[in-house]
Length: 392
Image (cartoon, rainbow, N blue to C red; front, side, top):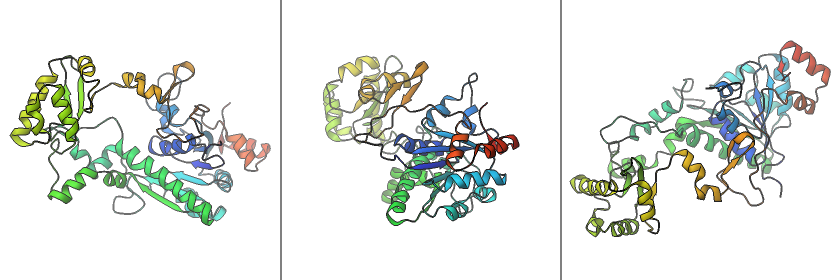
């Protein structure tokens, strides 16, 4: 079978994390994703926290299977080259602050003049309108505004950041990919493209499900660390083991909790499943004391045959070696030991095979401009004038 998105071309003007992750989803599904980079620094992720001359590992991971064209969009010839590429594209995605692509002459209106079927996605922190539309921001800021960061952390402690960028990825990259594909289907069915406006702060708010539920049902959000899934009940939380490891206890349903209490030979704790207040603290303290009596590995062995949703808290190295992820072929080791993580969704007839490595800046400028109808003399003239950039 051909790849699901074979024949779909995406022009990607984004940098760093959210936009490149959104287009990685599309590239892994077979789309021809063309990175449009400037002739200066290009995608900042290339040089973020570098080790030696090689591109940053984040850049390498996010941009596999893509091609790169380096254009100066501030120059009339650079804009002309971009619009020529856009004539045969299906999707354009950009991640600048509102107004930047208009100033460059490559906004939705300009692209739509040459391609009425285009799906044009703008992925920003706060969206294209509203009082904060033009403000700068990062994941931490969007989580702060959306009421997510306030909920993260232990009881009595400060807000705590995780190392997964919730707003950038769950709030931005994933909704952008979903919306672009929905708009692409509409364009194919009806012959007319769509404009897609995705705000990462909106995405963080939309996914703040349990806090929103608590506000609707109880009139208030529980204090940090005291909600159902943040440590407020004994059956759902993290407990330390004797060797400094931790166990993730997710025995939310009563059947799992009863199975755990039975395995621990503590049936007296069964009724404390969802206990709060002093009763809940007593059950948590008892569970903490029990788990502190053996190492993480010992607990994993003891509970291996018990259907109770208790698992080890693994570091990333252990996760990469985990037999479940290996069986699912999530981890691929490429040339030089480079680790590739497969897409999290499988589609019949489209097995994941790591494609071309992340491109050098402007690596595919010449062939793509030739595809767009420009001859070698024009490309050479533009290169000499700094309109385009190509590797030596």
